[in-house]
Length: 318
Image (tube, rainbow, N blue to C red; front, side):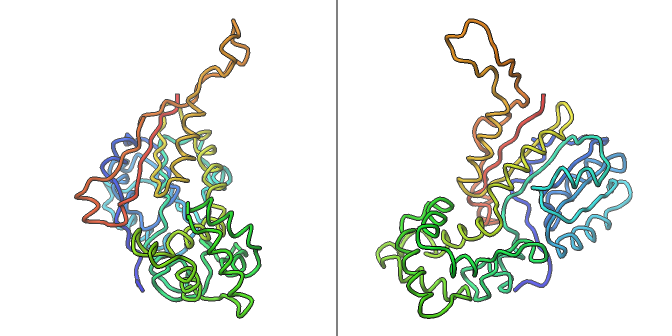
């Protein structure tokens, strides 16, 4: 269990390149965490710039504020740190009273503190309550409620759709069977059920057998994919012309949403090809900078194993 908010910024150099920060810019870190990326951005903004940091976790905000306010005067921009979810980006930026933004970063990974704190329930390696809420003060749905009340069909759908788990239906059936004997209230209980459901031969490869199920439950608890779409669309609305949006994703579902959102907003006329004159009048809003996602180097993965699955996509508003 960690006692401080630590964050090793993933793909830092690549993010800084694509954010293209200038001293006068207004930058939004939509997933502030421990301010790993924002500390470096702050130095590029300097006193002329504005840094708006958003996070659901009060611990993260306190840690980030301490680190950012400790910067020397010539490296510290105007700071506006806001507690909230980037799915509510419109309301948060209205409260910050900014007319527009020049760059925004989304780092979609779950923070080390959330993973390493058993009481948060995110970890399949440490025993704790089946919670998984990013913001326990505002959210009511927990992983415990899902595994004890969702029917087998819904559990199968969630686990399969949100994690590509090939044993989803079997895991769901085992969960339903086990909860009839006793409620599933801890991560250790759930890990035991998942291990029982997956054949021994399949458990020998691909990492921890419960990893995918825990990922799927976390996504369901926090409505992560819906929130991501909302956040991306709002971010593009707030970008000034030539403003940049950079997203770090960690699994294929997130990356697919980012790719599809960018592609859709970069699309020109959508009229049927046989129509002689454009009737839709559609104009592209974005230019996609990264035609293929940027992955970490082998050296970075060795330094920071949690960067292994990271991918960066970037776009520029027209």
